[in-house]
Length: 188
Image (cartoon, rainbow, N blue to C red):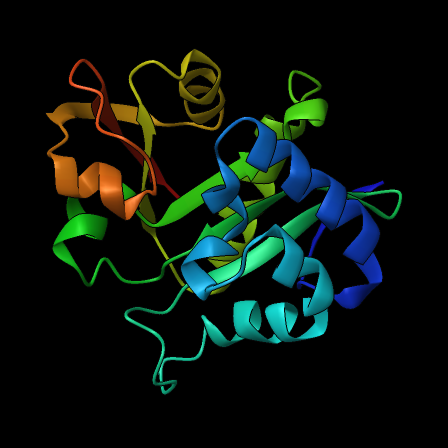
């Protein structure tokens, strides 16, 4: 059975395996580890603190938070599959233009198994529960799988936005001039 859970040390081993997969494909930032000051070694050594730091991202009163960001993990039979984040307010220019209300990622070894559709559907349920009525979900123009996931979950295409180099940096990756950010709205 799959479900969204709050980050927990209970999933340490499978999370670290998933983080290693993201690192190998050059998307370690998908775990939030780098943005919170962890590399793969310190992540393993300081995992309980990492979990606390992830949970603190949702705390609007915290000093480290630029904007509230609720991170949840998708688990299936006790195994970390991926993560999602909900940003209730589009309170920065980056979120309003490129980031959106929801971001999600599935670890490489678990892709193409329906988990992407499931994680977004479950995230939309949580978004509805916390009072959101309409959410912006974005994906890169070269990410056909994510585009299909968003459309499957009711995403209505709005526009494609060119991404300046600072938007790529905000996502922890190198600029790619032919990639645009596709913007979809989903009514809840």
